[in-house]
Amino acid sequence: MRLAALLYLLLAGTMCSAETLVYFGTYTRGNASSEGIYVATLDETTGALSRPRLAAKADNPSFVAIAPDGKSLYAVSETPWTDESSVGIVAYSIGDDGALKQLNQRSTRGGAACHVAVHPSGKSLGVANYSGGSCASFPINDDGSLGEIASFHQHSGSSVNPRRQQEAHAHSINYDADGSQAFVADLGMDQIVIYDVDSESGTLTPSKQPSLKLPAGGGPRHFCFAPAGNVALANLELTSEVALLRYDDAAGTLSVLKVASTLPGGQAVRGNSTAECLVHPNGRTAYVSNRGHNSIAVFRIDASSGDIEWIENESTRGEIPRGFGIDPSGKFVVVANQNSDNVVSLKIDPETGALSPTGSEITVGTPVNVRLLKR
Image (cartoon, rainbow, N blue to C red; front, side):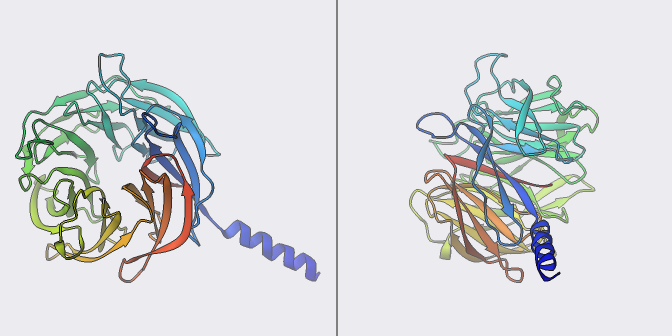
């Protein structure tokens, strides 16, 4: 009886150790050692990452997004665009074991598709083309495959940085909570371009407030909402800053509240640039990755007062941290270090939001983007 009870307890403990799938978008061209999209698991108790495995071979799948129902994944193909045969976005179904099966692919009509987001309804998605300086949207069929392109918008403009801002460079696209609007961070124009979204077709049309101007030379790269939806973040790639923004969902308007440095003491670090920004599920803490300083900057945000306050910078234990993800429980951050081919997990302090290493580290070739899926 004692042996049987012990076996039962061991089995119960195993069953209770829940895991979350973690997908990694990567670069496969040049000297990269990656073959495509990889998947691992995250232990929700310890933050340990499993050994990664190839989920699907793909060409420069630098950024991926998962459908709200968890059945489909979409990956950009960050490659040059020559004509309508050029692939910019690929649809996959997600298997029970986390493996990906390609459904179809589409041209995004612009070069270097670098970011994709799925509409909250799961009925459409949006793509940003970096070198093309444009964005596009596509309907999603019932089986998860992509329909014909629904809309395409070519951006036109420039800003003050002569090397990086001579022309438009759309760097990300994101939706608000109800999917009524889409926000495209354009690094080349120093603007967040705003579109109204048709929920059925996925079509994007310029909003009443067509764009929000951000500090000259900042280079807005990524954009994200806090859970309550009344504030958002945009990290400024070129000046190592993050902008806290106010969103009025009733009016459909966006405004700047405060801009803060992502570096300790606001001191410049030669060659540093920011990559990703995310808000914790509790809505009180925000994170931004620094490439060069090789850290995650941690901030306290107050939506009511419109304030953002730097807390700390935590090392990412690697070189050039690009994307990172927060697990659904809000306990861990998983960070992809592009130039050192490693991924690490960091523990989140539940009170302060501060980060500390879990000790878990895995090897992934040229990792760029992290997306988590709780099964």
